[in-house]
Amino acid sequence: GPLLTALRDRPTHLQRFPDGIEGEEIYQKRVPEKHPDYLHTCRVTFPSGRTADALKVTHPSAIAWAAQMGTVTFHPWQVRCPDTDHPDELRVDLDPQPGTGFAEARTVAVDVLKPLLDELGLVGYPKTSGGRGVHVFLRIRPDWDFVAVRRAGIALAREIERRAPELVTTSWWKEERGRRLFIDYNQNARDRTFAAAYSVRATPIATVSTPLTWEELAGADPDDYTMATVPALVAKRGDPMAGLDSVAQSIEPLLAMVAADEDRGLGDLPYPPNYPKMPGEPKRVQPSR
Image 1 (cartoon, one colour):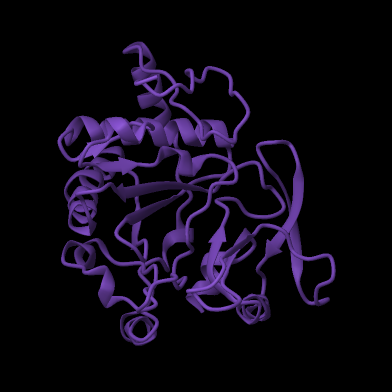
Image 2: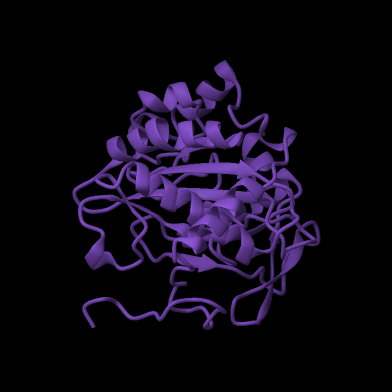
C-alpha cells in the first residue's frame, strides 16, 4: 500500500508507544540485535560519526512487526539504502509557531511555495504533518550530499521568507521568530526525519500525515484526515504522491539561489546543537546572549 511505498528501502526510525499514546514514548533508531529473520536493516551514519543498523522496510511484514512493537509513527530518512549519504528527497517543513496554525501553513504552501516551485520548474508534493504543519517533498536525483541539499533547502526557505516576511521566518532562534511560520531548514540535515506519508500520529483522534493535491490542501482541515477516514479516501481517489518517484529533479536551480545568497552576504545557518561544528557554519549563539 501507500505507506509501504513511502518507506520502501529507506532507513526508518520508529516512534513507539508500547503502553499507548498516554504512556512512555520510545524513539528507536536501531533494530534490536535479536529480531526476526525476515527483517532487513540498513547501516546509517549519524552526525557524531557513530553508526547504527536501522530498519529498512521492504515488505508489509516489517510494518506489521513495528506495529506489534507499539510503533505509531514511522520516520524515514530522505535517502534510500544502500546509499545513505546522498538524499533523493528535499523536504520543506512549514512549522507553525505559537500564535499560528495550519491555516497559515496552508496559505504559505499554496500561495507562496507552490508558485515559487512553478517558477523554478520544480514539482513538490504536499502532505499534512498530522499536526498543525505542512510538509512538501521534492524528489531529487541522489547526486548531492546532505550539506548541499540542506543549503538548497535554506535558499528555498529564504526566498519564501522574502516573499512573505510577515508570515515566514528562517530564524533558528525562537526568540526571533515571532508569530510566524518557521521553515525548519535543518530537516534536510543528516539524521533529521519527518513522519512518513500515511503515518499515524500520536493524537487523540489518530490523525494521519496525509498527502493531498495542491487543490485539496487549499481547503484542507488536518483533523479530517484520521485512521478512520484516510483508507476510504485513498481507495476512492488514489494516492496524490503516486507520481513522486516518476521524476528525479536537479537541485541546480536552488544551488544557483545559494550562490546568489552568498553574493548578498548570506551564508550558512546554524545546525542543531547535537551536530559537530560544520564548515562555514555561523556561531551557535542565540542573539540575546
